Length: 121
Image 1: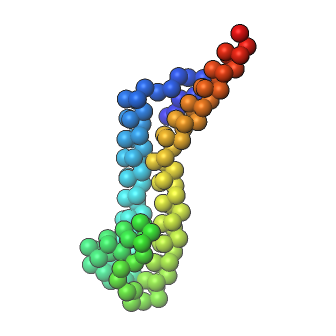
Image 2 (image 1 turned 45 degrees about the vertical axis):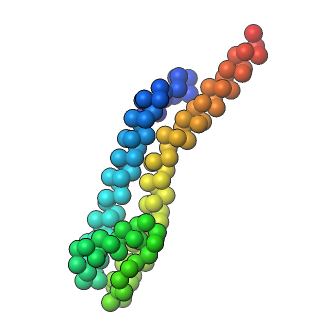
Image 3 (image 1 turned 30 degrees about the horizontal axis):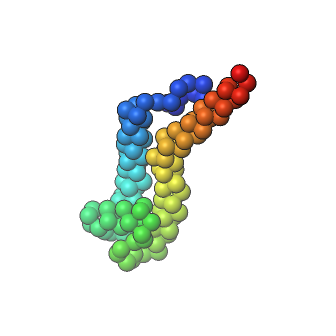
């Protein structure tokens, strides 16, 4: 997926494609825990689909639940879901930021190689 250290830097157009692809992968990955949250809130807290979506997306975004949770099971689910969402959020952030970090490191490596080549001749 990423070019090797001895390959040239991607063109801006190819880099933009890579950034878009990473963003789409990140968005698709967010759909999985969002669906888990909606199903959990509907089943355990008895929320309507729209309210379950709101609560799941708020926790997934790091804001916290909106509706009061009626049962101990719903509260335990919300706590575990919040822990899962926090870790998952970091994973998705890594997927989205990977092209930028790789490009910076690749550019630095190429610049370092240029300095070595020019000083030896």
